[in-house]
Length: 276
Picture 1 (cartoon, rainbow, N blue to C red):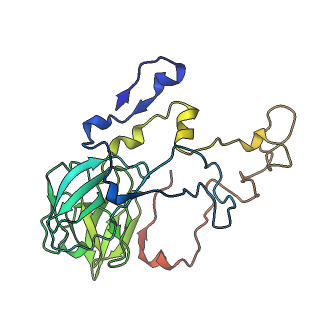
Picture 2 (cartoon, rainbow, N blue to C red):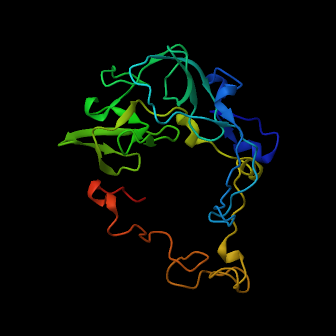
Picture 3 (cartoon, rainbow, N blue to C red):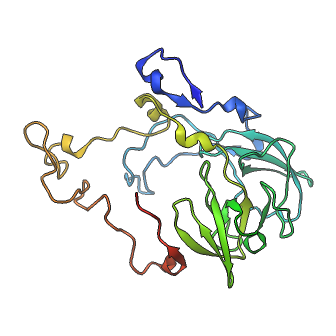
């Protein structure tokens, strides 16, 4: 982690990632980038559906390959790069047929390392195999949910799932949330864990840095007027004045179960995640 000299009060506890230690390229591959408009919490109608999002630094989008549809063609890692649109680092790889692609970089992946997507690939960091060909106890990331549907699970910085067992056409995975669930063993997964493990240790340090990230201020309900929130109003500071905490629209929060009782994936979950 990078520490800062306390030139201001906010700098005193601020921390960051020492990118020079991990990254090998400053500018992205131009053919794999394009501009885009961030939704910043708005839906297709332009209405706010997620509050406290907006502004932030302008971002260039890097096209990341989550399909991994070039089978049995070796590739060489040319650079490890920063991506403003995700927490993990990305790797620029050159396939031997000349094609370039960006992929999510695992920890310990270095420039000039060779990776391959193959059913017969070695159990080596960065390689991609079918779940049924991966031994029990292996750490994996970039996991598909449906065969050839593209990587959906375990894509955030430092994240991995542990392969616990193979069972009649399914693989049992222990997810980062501690949930144990079944996934078809005919889906693809990458070996290793996502890079930038120190991301969770970052101390933002000041409100301005949150604004650079596109995170807007969050106002407490008890600081509002009665017309604006169920907790609003009162002379001085007041408690909630009700049995359970609720949100702006009166729905229960903090510990209230919102999962549908008959959700389609219930049968695939062996044990639920442990709540803190």
